[in-house]
Amino acid sequence: MQTETVAAPAGWGFRPRWLFIILTSVPLAGTLFWWAGRHYFASELSFLEYQQFVAMVAIAVAGGYQLYFWVQRNDVGRPAICVKLSIDDYIPFQPHWIWPYSFLYYLMLGLTVISIRDLAQGVHFIFGGILLLVSGCLIFYLLPTYVPPAFRSFEVNSLSTRYLAFVQSIDNDRNAFPSMHCALATYVGLIVMQLPLVGPWLGGGYIVVIAVSCLLVKQHVIADTLAGITLGGAAFGVNEMLGGWLP
Image (cartoon, rainbow, N blue to C red; front, side, top):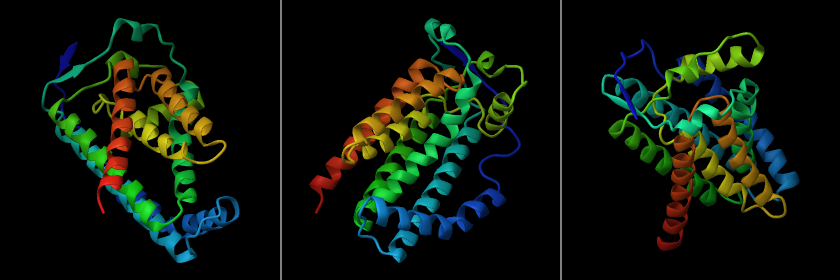
């Protein structure tokens, strides 16, 4: 393991314009999800209930990003460790995997929103996501970790590498272990796996693709991804147990 201390960057989190875009897109997203839920998932939610739920998801996502970036930017003065193993050096750099890494994420989250049966189930899912996020950020703060600097050094010579460089300009090399990308993908994937017919294949495949993409774009090492999958599965399990135990 290696240890480093770095200086804090100037800004952190989503700028107001990004928060504005997220919040103003709620009515459109709510309308699209209501239409898809009615036609393809036999959802019982009304138009207003979809708008309410999408608003809650948007606020949870925006707040979650702010918490994640606050921790990332405010533990940079402390020594951090890197959990890279020698086998990580043999994983090839494939920058085109940045596209599923970035966008498949939100497509599957949208599928989860579309498929909920009622608001109570939706709030239950949001609570599990918050439980996951808070747990992960607590680990990040108590045990700062970073991605190897060599993994973030590459030639920007294509659309994929330009977009990857943009992602890394927002998301620095901290908050590496566990991979929150893998943790949230696992949590959402386990929810999707409960859908009939294609759910198990779709949810399981999603978890695998996100984990592979994290490694191939060098955003994480193997230990990060495995820990993220474990955290996401644990959060899902705890949330399901709480739903069964509490009245």
